[in-house]
Length: 96
Image 1 (tube, rainbow, N blue to C red):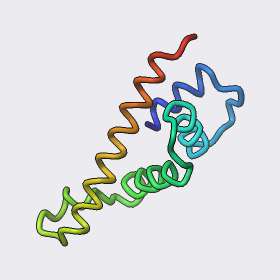
Image 2: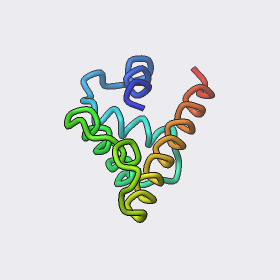
Image 3: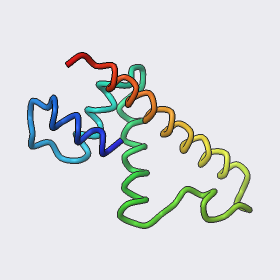
């Protein structure tokens, strides 16, 4: 998502000086309808914890974790994948 947000900003951005988080949020708001900004911030925070703190999704490190935590982790991972796919699809369909 972050890579596509940067490409989108370079191609269509009105303000080239947006930071990573603002680009990320703007990209999702533009190409994925019906979600709140709070959801997008959750995705960005997960991206930050993976990138800066070395965290992984729970299923990547502990297959015997609490089943409820595993379910929440899996749902977040699936949600991020679906949002990324939808955003890319809508970005590709954008008229230049």
